[in-house]
Length: 197
Image (cartoon, rainbow, N blue to C red; front, top):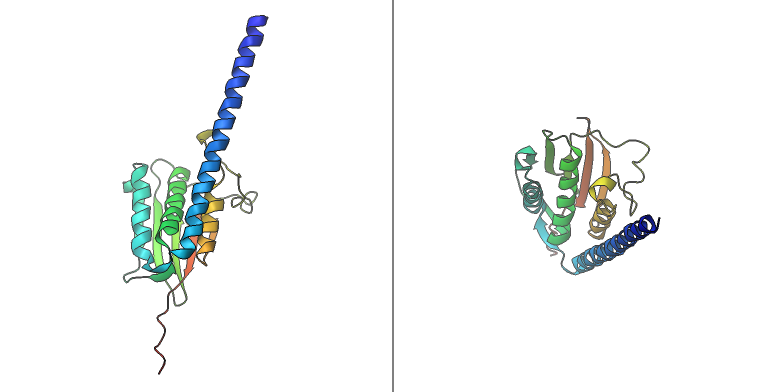
């Protein structure tokens, strides 16, 4: 019985140690991302959202070995916004990785960039099961995750939304007409002001 008790105690100690390590890891991630968001307010500039977003999407797909599953459709002209490269790259990368992971192994992720008169839009559509009505309002809450078995922290979408909000934009998640989920980033278009006479 002492051996069983000792073995149970060792398992318990390992679990507590793992929880402590994970809490420090989450704390470092949050700290680093807060620094990026804070710095982004000072490093905003006029940038071509399409160039930055497409590169970030391709890098994210490549990091998962899924370049062939990413279908990119972009505006035929530059889509200029007032933003910051780092947060935009992090946000797009997170959304594309989420979409690839939510899709079946042969599923396609559709990525598009469009520019309207006042707003520019990035859409990331996966070919997974979509977002159920029960969780659609919870997905942006910190620590909410459906990826517990894959080590998800539940911080990705919450931080992504905050980064986009810091840039004066919006992040939404809905179900796509193709059946999967569709994440949309909207940023205000940069308008060149007319010189005053």
